[in-house]
Amino acid sequence: MSVLVFAESQGGQFKKSAFEAVTYGYKTAQVLGTECIAICLGEAGNAADLGNYGASKVLSVADSALNTVDSQAYTSVIAQAAEKNGASVVVLMHSATGKGIVGGLSARLNAGSAPGVNQIPTNDGAFRVKKNVFSGKAIAEVELTSDVKVISVMGNSFQPEVVGSPATVETFAADVPAARITVKSVDKVQGSVPLPEAEIVVSAGRGMKGPENWGIIEELAELIGAATACSRPVADTDWRPHHEHVGQTGVAIRPNLYFAIGISGAIQHLAGVNSSKVIVVINKDPEAPFFKAADYGVCADLFDVVPRLIEAFKKRKANS
Ligand SMILES: Cc1cc2nc3c(=O)[nH]c(=O)nc-3n(C[C@H](O)[C@H](O)[C@H](O)COP(=O)(O)OP(=O)(O)OC[C@H]3O[C@@H](n4cnc5c(N)ncnc54)[C@H](O)[C@@H]3O)c2cc1C
Image (cartoon, rainbow, N blue to C red; front, top):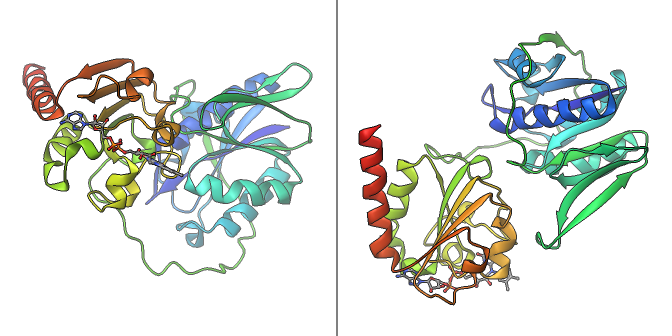
């Protein structure tokens, strides 16, 4: 028995979420009294580092065909590793890649699956995990009764924890299926923190009045190392790119700190952000629904508050 964790990498480097996944896998392995094994696919330079987060060994499949995401190939290779290592639980992140794998992998392993979990499983005779449902309005406790279980973990639910030391990296000789898709081109957003991975997010809505005013949002985000996000109408009207749209129909995020600037706080927006650890709302309308979800609220004109915040952060940076 073991817990197998798929550690995602990009351009040869692990994403932060890979360390979150291994931390989750390690804690799950502790609950089950077994070991946590990590697997990385394609080029991954610092594979041994996964041991720091609790992997007892790392399986590496350094086939260049796996350098770009191919859900079918990834599913096949992870399933082979799970079977070979007697994995009773397979852990993925609930990322775009993880979402593309979780269903197929569960079918292939004849496993029960729980996508989008946000707590460490319990195993007091029954193996149970928890996840948010109904746009974060309720928590479902799911019991998995199959021999093999596949779990995908919501990003930012667990901070990576260093618990060990670099692990042995073993080559895993997988049968990598021929690709049935060809990636023609990849357009990457340059220079900014990826939204699903961001610990701080500065998000703005229609209260900004127009795209020409976004300079202060970008400046604030850059100062505090945050990703930028927006409400849906802002993306729909092309004030901001669609990949920044958060909410029920956009990206769901769980940053440690979420700034909601000039956003009303409609239920569909909240659905994607209400798992943020701390929410700061800046809105000039005291009746704005977002204040009900806020940890801190500033009821004022954003064009007055945001420049002052920028000045304050600049001063803090200069003094540190
Ligand atoms: C099926 C469906 C799915 C949806 N999915 C999503 C989704 O995924 N994400 C999403 O965001 N929306 C979604 N929506 C839309 C959602 O219902 C809201 O219409 C939208 O979130 C409102 O965007 P907003 O808050 O930016 O704009 P508004 O509702 O226009 O609010 C602007 C806010 O800015 C404040 N404001 C204005 N000027 C200032 C100022 N100078 N200083 C400070 N505050 C100011 C106002 O008081 C107001 O609260 C969806 C809707 C439907 C029907």
